[in-house]
Image (tube, rainbow, N blue to C red; front, side, top):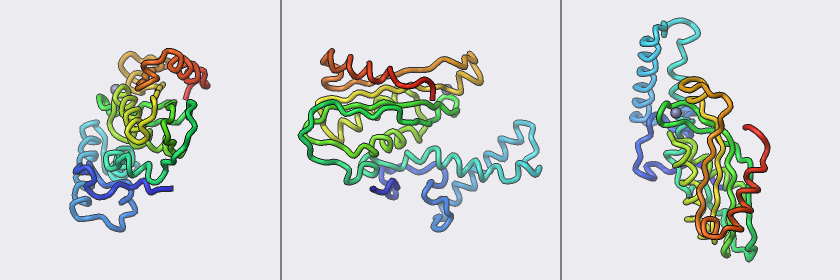
Length: 223
Ligand SMILES: [Zn+2]
């Protein structure tokens, strides 16, 4: 297994708060700690604006919990595809469709910062290389642990697989429930959003596309 931790400043992105792998508190830099405290203060203020008393017992530690939770939920900003795939690519002659279905997915919509969750199905047709199957869920996580829209998330996963393997084609389907639709707004509890991204032969070859979509859509119901 390769490490899933990003290296410092890998993409030149300043983490919003503390990084997930720094949550042990062992090696927090002063700058990271300052950002964490600033975030906690914002959460405390948010509680006040909601009419709450941030000093009451149940809420005293909420700002620090929220800061840590948000760091975890957005830890994908600090990861690169190389970090999550590591040494997991192998030469292989197999040229039939490889599919990992029903990959659990948890993300947050960038419009409301509310969760959306569901399943991803990923397939590709190898062209000399395969990837360790456990790496595909890691790629999903890397992009899901950021503020997202489902459409972009679907495309980013497909492009990452394309970049890593240069396969004949890639297909990704995501089916997800959005709390911003279920708890607020239209309050439609049962509407599932389905997105797909098709690259290479999954886009150009009708039979490949049909086989993939049939396999993707015969998965179990609900998340
Ligand atoms: Zn939303």
